[in-house]
Length: 270
Ligand code: SAM
Image (cartoon, rainbow, N blue to C red; front, side, top):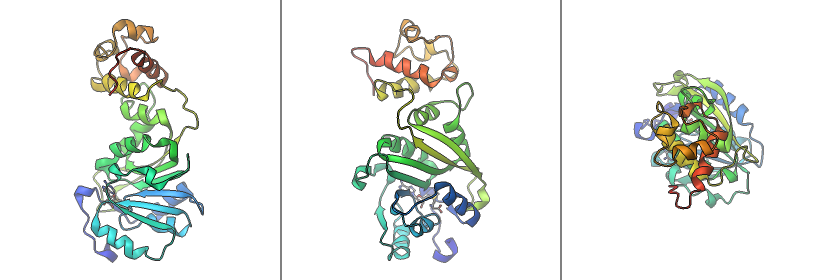
């Protein structure tokens, strides 16, 4: 693609374009687009994934920040009636503009690695309209998302993503599949929002606050890391052993701590 359009990749927009048709096909098979699906692609670039999505007959909206790529995409998909281009920053994009039905929107993207975590948090805030999400991310980020309690990868990202979604690490992609090649390995992840949250906090902001505080100093005991938000007695009242370290707690325990915090009359949640 890059040879055809002569676009010079911009580092500041995290541009690593997929050129490996085997990988592109594998991604499309994982997404399994069906005619009429409502889809949103973030960062379509020169259209490596976009082309197959348009061809499959989905109703596709895309958001691209780079004006040069916007004009390439406008030319390439000028005749496609099922394609709508939004120029701008996906981090600021208001998903309600698309007017999706609840649990309908299928989100995909080979994401710019420099904004992938804030972007996923932005999407989690809109999880009620999302049916599923397929992303190419740094492999290390996918491992953290899919982590289980007890290990070094279990942290804020694992907890906040798994609170909202089922996480599947589908397959890895090496640097040679991109142009220019990134310095790290990549992986495809599928996130499917839970129909019913397995562990629902009374206030999700309290969970966010507890998890941030807990993992600020992951080597310390919970009694210590949480002392700005909960007393040692409150930690025990949530049924949590304060001498444990944050990575030893599972989701249910974090939710109990969050509920303990939101039960405080003057809790500062943000
Ligand atoms: N999807 C293409 C592919 O697979 O070849 C391009 C992937 S490239 C890793 C990331 C794309 O996201 C680039 O096209 C880049 O310009 C775009 N991008 C970067 N930051 C963005 C943002 N904040 N909002 C929307 N698009 C962004």
